[in-house]
Length: 568
Image (tube, rainbow, N blue to C red; front, side, top):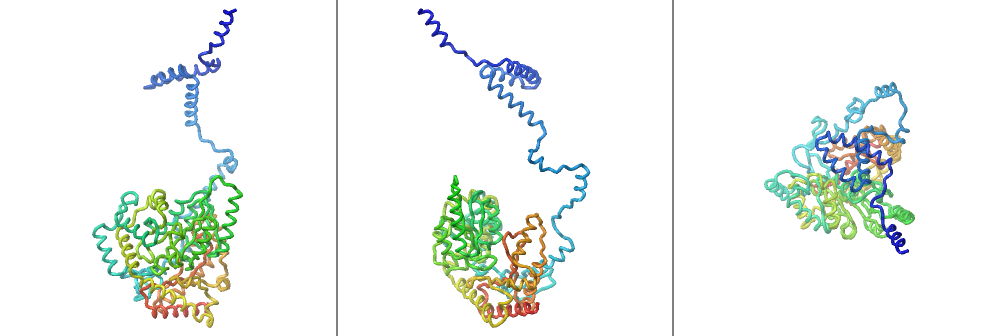
């Protein structure tokens, strides 16, 4: 009795030392191993692999089978031809060899540069009308040439410059530039994060942040690249951007590179913006997203294509109400708006650090230098230094451009006389252009798009006059350009638009040849624009011009516009 019980207990406690393997697997892998062994023995160093496999089989045969299977599959995958997915094969047209050859013969590649006689006839006039400044820098009076020096004009009143304050031409700034070139040379040696930035660069970043009242500033080598690089550094797919529908091309590129979902609100219409933000927040609440997206409102200080000014106090209220961040491009408002030229917040009596989350600006306008910058808090600045493409991979600014900007800011801090004079000239520019318009027919032909405090005045033909004389509307131009862009056409010509551009250029030519005054069209490449835009004239004033000179010049421009429009 006890013996049987002990035998039962002993038998139950004895377990197999390994899991039995089916015979067909043993046979198959034995054959594979034999062939593999024969092959490897002939390869130099193959016996090491054989020893490893033998040891592995004894320790863990299942792992060995998996490893051998993966190796064989890898060899098969490497040697086999790539096969397209069924969905791609189903979309592929079933063409014969003859049909393929015919298609190849018919295909005509688009030239890298379109230099056809027809194109040169339609576009060549633009090159001929570009003014080139001779004998000196950008001043209030310049000498210019056009059409390969076939036209030369001396002592021309310059009303086309964005060098609004003209401080860069002062003797103090010029001496600072000479001294910096002597000590630092004329170029940066690389990107900022490597060895491009020097002490003068960091000094300017500190000066910018102190002058504009923010925690940090970041310098960029090219002002046009600032918006695309900064905005894409803070956004990703799934984030939300709400932008004004009259933003410049630089910000349009930034929105495309951001990969975010983009919405547009009517230009400076806060009711439209409030409604759109409410709808977006309601949609977000309904979707119950796994992560909260980043949300930005994007606008400009003084708009590049209209000269209008963004209503910052209303924007701040809406961004706080709907929990959005505010991104403002102040390329044309910095150095212009506010008692000391500190831009949009100073103009409206607000603190920049409390009102705008990310500010971008240019040093090529009022500062008279080159490059761009961003303003914001420490976290924003730190992230750009490691995540912004233009900062990480583009060369830094030359030291002398940085030193000149620092010197100009120091002058503006201690003496705001140039800014004050510019404000007075901007008022004269606007008032002279708008005075007595009801008594003449100017309002029938053109409309002023700019704000009275903007130093740049934009004049567009009225919609009715444009349609009567050039037979197209703003929406028709936008639809035509959009359709050609969808077809990836790199050469876009819309004849009614070209005719209007030529008419505006005729006004520019008449003002130059008859009165020795240089104004300009608002130049842009319509094939790159993704928002509705129409041609316009642009008149700029700088602090170097006298009040009497500006007032007299604007009256002559008005007379020319009225005469040519009425005779069209």
